[in-house]
Image (cartoon, rainbow, N blue to C red; front, side, top):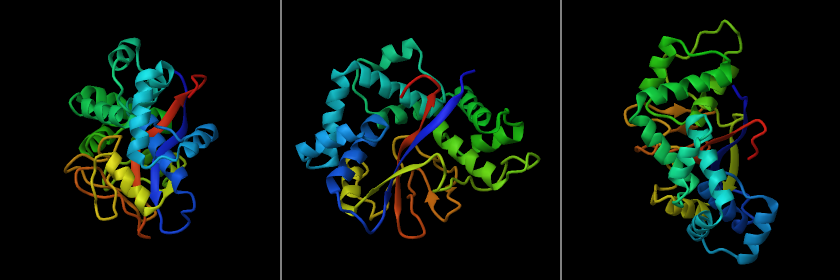
Length: 271
C-alpha cells in the first residue's frame, strides 16, 4: 500500500489584528475554495496585478479555468478524492468528473454526501484513516464510535486521530470509543490563512453560506459532524462543528473556516 503523506489541511482563521494585505487574503481564500490548496508566489503575483474585487469573483474565474485546463482540473479531482476518501480516484471517476467544472469545495461536498449514503464505503475510509495514523485497523468499538459521529472526510478523521494520538502517546492507551471527538487547532494537519472580517464575509458569500454573525460554518469537506452527531471540539478551546447549524469559533473570538479536508498526497504522486 502506498504511503500517504500529509501536506495541507484547508482552513481560514479569522483574527482581529494584522490585516495589511486584503488582496492576498482574498486570493488565498479563493484558491482554497476552488483548488483545495493555497496560491503559490507566481499565482499571488498574477492575481494581485488583476486587483480582484471579491473572493466570489476569483472563484468564478477559477471555476472557468477548471473547465479549460485539463491538468489543473485533474489535479483538483485527485486532491478531492484523497482528502475525502483517502485514496486516488480511478480512471472511471476521472472520466465522470472531468466534463464538469466543480470546484474542490463542491467535489468534497459531493464525495462526503456519497459516503453518507454508502456506509460500507465510509467504513473503508475510517479504516484507511486508522492505518495512516496508528498503523493498525480500528477495533469494533472504534468503528462503532466513528459511525455515530456522522460522515466525516478522511482528512478530518486523520486530524482527529492525530490529536488523540498526541494526547495519548502510550502504545497501550485505549482507543477513542466515547466522548466528544476533538481536533486540535494547532494540529500538524492544519494550515491556516488569516483573513480580515470583510474577506471572511466574502468567503462566506462565495461558499453560499450567507452571514452567520461573524462565525463561519464548515464547508467543503461536508459537515465535520452530521446532524445529531455532536461536535468536534478543539482541545485548545475551539469548537469545530459542521454546517448543520453550529459554528467554528475559538475561545479568543476567532472563527475558523474549514474549506475542505486536508491534502494528503501519495508519495511520488506530485501535488
